[in-house]
Image 1 (tube, rainbow, N blue to C red):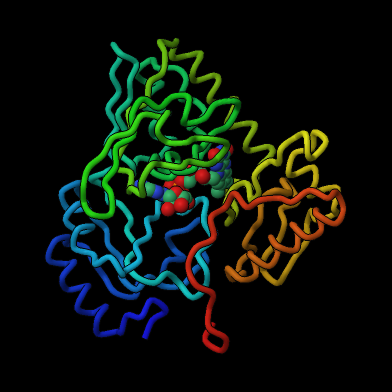
Image 2: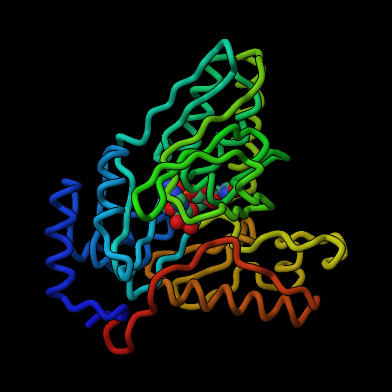
Length: 321
Ligand SMILES: Cc1cc2nc3c(=O)[nH]c(=O)nc-3n(C[C@H](O)[C@H](O)[C@H](O)COP(=O)(O)OP(=O)(O)OC[C@H]3O[C@@H](n4cnc5c(N)ncnc54)[C@H](O)[C@@H]3O)c2cc1C
């Protein structure tokens, strides 16, 4: 029996039912390949809807007692080694469309569209203001949830409307004011799976926007381990009054955690707010390393760091992981 009280046969039956409304449904799918860290155990049921109708039908067919989790492209998550109980949804290519309007400077993007592609689409249409998305390796769905941002801009500034479907299958749209946005955080009025966003920029000169994006990419290349198995910034920057003006990486550095290792997990030497899977780390190794960093920072500076990376799923059962 699984941790949510579902027997294997219940899950088998549910998978058959869900397959009836959403073609791509599989049992026991390993999730590590769907994350940047390349760690994580299996999803009991993995669904990959291709259209809004399929997603709505899928959500309304999942019984209330079955937990449902949505993944973007896994650039901000540690999925634990025991995997995720219930249904994991990853939106398919049908949600990746990007449409840029040169007249209104608006961009409509599906939740599975990659942030970088949205930025590139905008520049081609002479739309400025979305360059910050160029270096964020996530999807629009993840960006809406995380209020993704960089270089003094974030989603909340550019968003006109976010479109989503709730867990009963009903469609909604929200303005940014309704989404309770703060630094790398959103608080929608009800749990939804984002299906897309309407963003608005301003008129811009293509060459100038490209130059700004090139600068952003060069700065990232220099300062972040963007080719490693990582999850981006591990901890949110603390309230600067509390940390005496120090950012998370400065506190981590002062606590001498740069390069710290626990088995295959390592604090990046290039940017010490990034954790890295050097090859054979488990989710437990990464989480233990993160908690060790938090404890050392607390001891050294008195500041409590808070995880920006979402940690989801169950720990491996001893002896099985
Ligand atoms: C090298 C590197 C650099 C990074 N730099 C930045 C940066 O500069 N700025 C920044 O903000 N982030 C950065 N990140 C973190 C990450 O890219 C962002 O948080 C991104 O927005 C996550 O998107 P994702 O699609 O990967 O979401 P995931 O990691 O898959 O999920 C993140 C959260 O969003 C939720 N979610 C995903 N899709 C949906 C959906 N359709 N509906 C509802 N919820 C959804 C998930 O349930 C989860 O809670 C970086 C990461 C890496 C690896």
